[in-house]
Image (cartoon, each protein chain N blue to C red):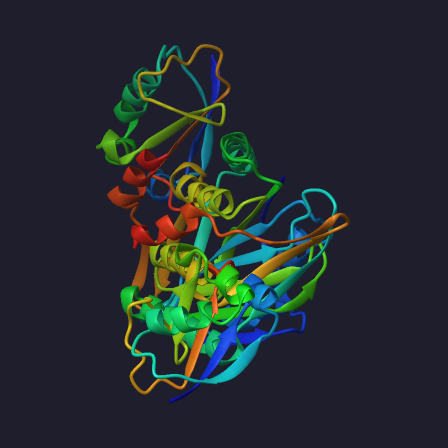
Length: 145
Length: 145
Length: 83
Length: 83
C-alpha cells in the first residue's frame, strides 16, 4: 500500500510500470487517473487539502479496500496546489489476482476519495473563481458499497 | 481509437502517458492490464489468435464502446505468442470527460474482449499443458451490458 | 479547554482565516458552532446552513452532534470534492 | 463451393491441422459439421460436442444453424479466453 499526497507532478506511466512490475501473483491491474478538464475558459484549478488529515483519510480508505477485496497492492497519489488544464490531479491503481476485484476496488477507492478525502477544488476562470460543488450523486455513490 | 494485436512486448506506462497526454477535454482515464499470473508451476502461457479476425473483432468492440459512452478515446493492445509469468498480456485504456463512463467502458471492453475476441490461452506447466477453459461467469458477464 | 479550529475552502474564505485557537466549554460540535455563530456576522454567514458543512474532530469525520470530549482540533469545511 | 476451413486451439490440435481447403455443397454450418464428422474419427472427436465450440463465418461469429451462402472461410474453435 502506497499513499502519497504532494504538490509535485508525477509520472503516471512510470508509476503504473513500477506498481505492477516484477511480480507474478497478480493477473489484473486497474488504474484511474483524474485530469484537469477544461470545458471552456478554465485558467487553472486550485486544490486545497487538510494536511494533517489527508494521508490518514486516504490510508483508511485504502485499508478498507484491502480488507474488502483480495488485492496484491494499492497505490494512491493525489496532488494539491495549482494545476493547469490537462494536468494529472491524481491516480489510483489496484493490483489483484482477478479482474473483478481490481476493477471494483479502483471504483470503490474513487468513490470514497471523492467524498471522504479532504480535498476541495476551486476552478479559476477568466471571469472569476468558484469552488466546485459536491454532487448529490457522488455522496449517493457511496451507497453502492 | 487505437487497436493493436502483436507478439512484441509493449510499455504500458509509456502507452498510458501517450494515450492521455496533451489533451484537456478528458477528466478521467482508466486503464486495465492483464498479466500472466503464476499460481504455481506455470512455465509460460501460449496465446493463439485468429489473425484475420482478431483486429476486426476488437475494433468492433471498441466502436461499440464509443457509441455507448461519451469517450474521448479508446486504446486496446493485445499480445499473442509465448508469455512468461509476470508479463503483460494486454491493456485497455479509456478516456472520458467523466469518471463513470471511463470505468464502465473499460469494464465493458474487458468483458467483451474476454469472450468475443478470438484469443485462446494455453498454460504450459512443468507437468503438462492445458487450454484455459472459458468460465460460464465470463459469458454471463456479457448480460450486464 | 483549548481548541484549534480549522477552516477550509469557502468556509475559510468566508471567515477570513485558516485556523484559530479558542477557549471553549462547548460539550459538542453543535455547541461550538453556536458559540462561533454568536461571535460575528462572518461566522454566522459561514455556519448558516449546517447541511452544507462537514466537520472533523481530531482529523476524523464526524457529525455535528458529536461530543468534543478531549478533542484538540476541530475542522469545518464544505463537502469534499477530491478525486 | 470451395471453403477454407480453419481450426484453432484444441480443435486444431485434435484435428491435427490449422486449416484446409475443402469442396462442399453444405447449405449451413451444421451441414458442414456433419460432413466433417463423417470423414474420420479425429473430426468426429473434435466436433463431438457443439456446445463446446464456436464458429465464425468469414470472420464474424455466428451460430451453427447459419447459412453458408457465398462464404469463403469458416473457422471452428473453443470459447475464447482472451483478456
